[in-house]
Every structure is written in structure tokens, then in C-alpha cells.
Image 1 (cartoon, rainbow, N blue to C red):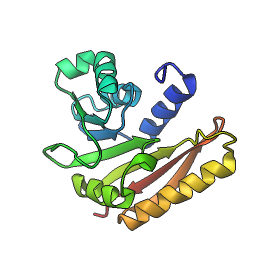
Image 2: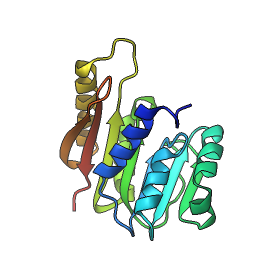
Image 3: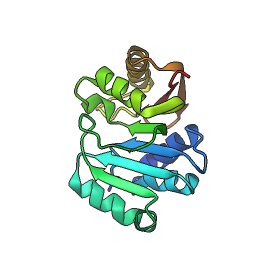
Image 4: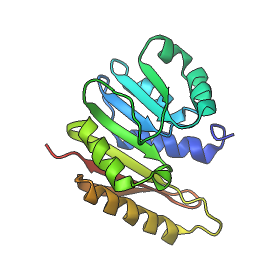
Length: 180
């Protein structure tokens, strides 16, 4: 269902585009769901590696099917794990994405500090929020974006910026950089 909702596909592809992924990049998505953004990352990081963690075993299976060729080629690595118990990714990451998941993390500022430690100097992070509560509006999205900015600031990220995708309700993507 999540993979076929046009707004979800559009939101995930848009978010990946904002991270400016290069062919040799190593990227991580936390809470990858059915693997739409994972597939988009794999199409951009053609000589890199794409990692994903999701707390749902069903989503791991679905995303693995969607990305079967890249998984077989060992360019995509999907793991059943939570954000507070991440596996090792080896070398530093170039980019991290989390779509509509930060609000479910325990101690999100602490998790973001841990994630910053996994990024190379100058690495990028994108946190996306499309509020799905009844009656969500542009103001709801703006509040969510401010909360994400505050968390990224607490975690030590710099050069924060907010991008908005005009859906109903609007989607906010807060981007930040790991200090060099």
C-alpha cells in the first residue's frame, strides 16, 4: 500500500534528490518501509553502497523484493534493526535519510548525535516530515520542520536548510551537514 500511494513515492524520490547522491556514495535510510527511496538511492549510488534499517521484518522482505537485483549485486544491504541498535556500516557514510520516522525514535537528539558520528566530515542528513494527523495543515508541517531543525542543532549538525514539497499536507525536508 505505502509503495503505491503516489504521494509517498513522490515524497521519497524528492527527498533522495535533495541529498545530491553521487555514484560512489555510501548512504543509509532509517525506516525504509517498502524500499522506494532505497531503489532511488541504488539508481544514483551505482558504484557505492546503500544501507537500510527498518524495525519491521515485513518491510525488510518487501524492500528486498523491490531491490532484488541490487541486493544480489551486494550494492544494497537491508537489515531488520532499530535506530537505537544500528549495525556496523564499516566506512563512514556520505548521506543519511529518515522519512516520517524521527518522531518514533527514543531520545531523538541522542540518536542524531550517534548518526552524526557515522557520517564522514561534510556528510549530509535529510529528515523528512509529512504530518498525517487529521486536520494537518501547512502550519503543522512548519512546526514539524522547526522541531527537526531544533533536534539537528542539538545534535551538532550545521548549514541547516528546509525544503518544502507541495503535497496535501505539505512535506518538509530539513537538511543538515556534518561539520568538517
